[in-house]
Image (tube, rainbow over all chains, first blue to last red; front, side):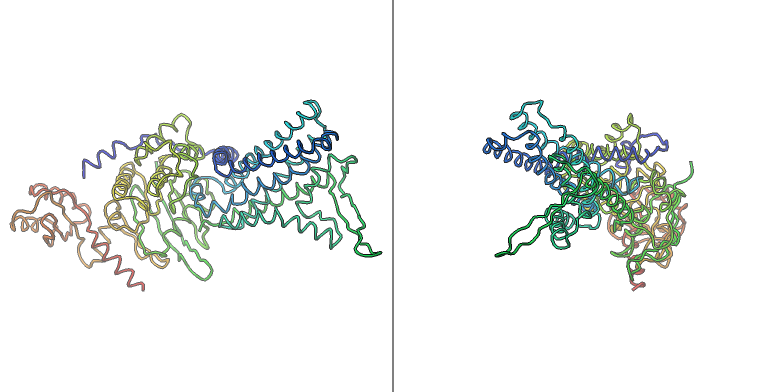
Length: 301
Length: 315
């Protein structure tokens, strides 16, 4: 026994007994973000998402090639407005659900949170570090999609045919990603089971908010400014021939026949660019603060 | 340098109507290992989680090295190594990457980090797996990495929640070696465990909790003495069978020994009233008898007896 103990002691660490200076919270966020981002990039879900985006990009490329005469004969503005403006929101939602749906709930269910919670860090450091890592991973996917579209655009219109509207649209898409990811993190922090967080965010973003938006504008006949998915229309609005840059939405009323001599009016709304941006920022700030507060109060019981 | 401390004052935790922990008053001070015992649901993990701010007290407060965990979590936990609930490590990380992350977040100087990670990985016998992904590891291997993560910054205070969980017998023995090594380096270790042998082997003191209340906290020797209704019991392990009856009588005649029983050919049980200081003399006297003494320990059965008696009393 004595010899056994002696051998164990001989291998003991020899670090000097100087009290460690724990890094500041901002520094810790950066360190945690780096580790989490690496974790996301090497995760299976990242590979799957990249595969999905490549598939979506491939389908769009094939459709454009097939309908070349009608699509390509229009301007590059219409090309990007239709493809980027139409699909970027979907890619963003997909990325946010993949990386944010179970980001916080998974820390409880998979017990990975216990690996971090015994450290001298604020809980907000974990929340913010994971958020930024998820944001970076989502941006990788979003920019992959953009690169596919740019390659198509360069092929049909040449490398110099980029409409200036693409830049504000991409910036709006990034802000939309901030908001959607903030919202998925908030929902995720309501649960301690990954599946609940994942399913709820998937249902809400893929169907729920769109349905709510339709109900508000179709039945209540009111501009659905309170629904986050409504804000995403600003990403495509930038490409419109007459852009509404303002804080109010554009109302489009269409009379549709419902029977002999009878008509009904269908009202739809498109958010103005400033309005969409304001909704996105409001969602980002409110969900960010509420999610952080919830996580601060969450117990690892 | 002041002695490391862990303290709980009036620590209470209620989950709805259920009181998981009821006004715990406990102060651990100095370099030692304290075993935290109690049946399932007694409040052990609840206590450890409050000590590390994973859950919040309904009342009371915890201190590590005199710093309130609830008021200054970041400062209080800076010098503590924590292993609670056998955490999972992000599966795509390698042990080296996981420990690098912990070292970075704790502020270990970059120049020391690599060497330190190599040392702790070697200490938990995971050096050969340092660059393999954790996702493919067994439960026991992950637990070794968790132990390494708790020790990577060489903390003054170590809080371990059933550290031998998932480990094979060799792994359990290695955990005991690690804890003994920490004691020799003047660390304070607070360790919950279900394995009484582990507690007897490495702990100097023991705290028993049941139904959220602390039943006792004392040295192992005092506990066995006080609750076993007599003098502390000591088991003497021998390298060879005790040769004769006269050898047993010689042992029985040693100062402080009040009774002596041959349990097995190579194991003797003594009742000893010489106190903790007298144990050193007892060991020297036994060695002088040339009977092949290999160990001197509190018997597990004594602790087990006390454990069960105290828990039953609570029922």
